[in-house]
Structures are given as C-alpha cells and as structure tokens.
Length: 330
Image 1 (cartoon, rainbow, N blue to C red):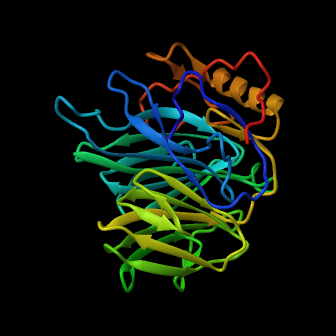
Image 2 (cartoon, rainbow, N blue to C red):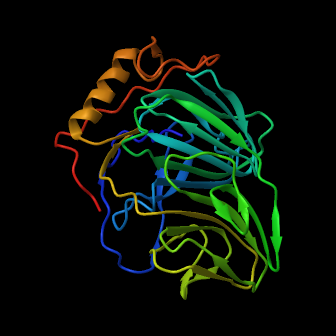
C-alpha cells in the first residue's frame, strides 16, 4: 500500500527507552481519490516509531465497496518502495497485487503476502470486482543494513489454524504456539492473527527479547492489565516470557506483532525507508525520473523501481519534499 497523502509525515525512527506498556490510538488517514478510502494508522505515532522491525501499521474496514455509501474499494496505482517489506493481511475481501519483479498474486483472507522491496520495487494493489466488503491490515517491516540493498522478492503463505482453549490462531511470521512459519525474514519477527472467545484468558509463551504490538481489530481486550478497544495498538516492552490476553464480553480478533528492538535508526518518508535525508531525496528523484506527467495521466519508464508487469494504471508521482530536513520523531 502507498501512503498517498500529499503531505506525508517525515520520520526518523530510532530505538528509545523502554517505558512500559503503552496503548496507542489510531489516526484517520485518507488514501486519496474522489471517494477516499480511509485507513486507521497507529504506527508510526508521536509516541512510538518501531515495534521490533515493524515500522508501519495501517488498519482498514470493514468498508462496503459498492453502492452510495461505498468507498469504491482499494485502487492504489503503481508506486515505489525501498528498504522495507510489505506484509498484507486481509480479514474480508480480495486484492490483486502486481509488481515490477514480475509477481502477480492475490491477497485473500487468512493468507499472507510479503513483498520485499530491497533496493527498489514498484507495485500496485487493487481490490477485485468480487469484493463487497474490504477489511484488513497493511504492515511494513524495516530491512536492516545488511539486507536493504538486496534483490526485490515476493512470498505467499497460507497458515493453518491452530486451536487452543478459547483461542484460534494463524501464525504467518515467526513462531508461536509451537508453530513456525516458513516465511523467511531479515530480522526475527512474529506475526499472527488471534481469535479469542468471549471472556477467554490466554497466556502465550513469548520470546523475552521481543517487544510486541497487539492490534485490536474487534472487541475489547486487556493486555498485561491495560484495557484496549477496537483499533488500538498496544505496545508491550521486552522482558517477559509470557503475554497475557483477556477478552471482554464479545469475541476478539487481533494481530500480534513482535521482534527484538531494531537497533538501527531509519528515516522514513512517503514510501521510502532509508538512513539519511539525502538518501531519501535521491530515492524520490529517481522515482520522479521514471514518472512523466501529472497524477491523472502519468506514464513512466523503467529505472531503479521498474514497472509492474501487466498494470495499466498511471503511476503515482511523489509528493514534494518538505522544506526542512527530514527530522527525528520518536
């Protein structure tokens, strides 16, 4: 997914002090278009920039696609990425993915699509005609120095459901509940969808070196004694080998994210993850060098980011750079 805001936040993300459990509320961000699809963004926030290597969390829906009140669905034209991996996870609907490394795939509920940008890739995401309701999450993972200049790539995985008392889980990245995902990542990560029955109390064995994020999709939940409601992201610092989740009176669906503190400062702006202001400026200039024309009728040529195979949508030109150096936000 692209951050199609015309004035995107510029963020330098760096590891900060451990301050205990934090409940982060979302902010609404329109993705653009005549019937702008709105997402709820909880990461990065003013309070926190990273959870492990997870650096971006957008949560959307359930949104009706058609009809007078419909959003029109997702129609994100070709746009670039560097230095990150995108992790797409749906609860409802279907999205078609095309990228410049030649991958053509569909994002479906309960199946993870992980795209590695590496040194540079461009891709598009469009909800299919069969989609009546769109509901899911788009997540980004920052690549460490040793991997961020690598080749672009793509991985698909459909995890089996794991059942425990009061709990159903699908582990799409890392290890949990005795299950390990086959999807390879550049840093240790955890990603899982959990469904909790009403009133369920679940104790999960977790890696004490990991910090965790609990994105609540539906219901109300207590995480480590802190109450959270739908759309909140709860940050849990490293140090404990157990994570206790207690569902409220209704079923709870959540995404559990985790990883060891990233340990590298990154600069993130628009769709780029780099290390310095100058590097991000250079990424933008290279993308603009591929794009010709305005947002409504742009065409583009091959370059660092390539051209998605089989996509006829005009590419998204980059927003103007801010008039100040990209600055640090923690």
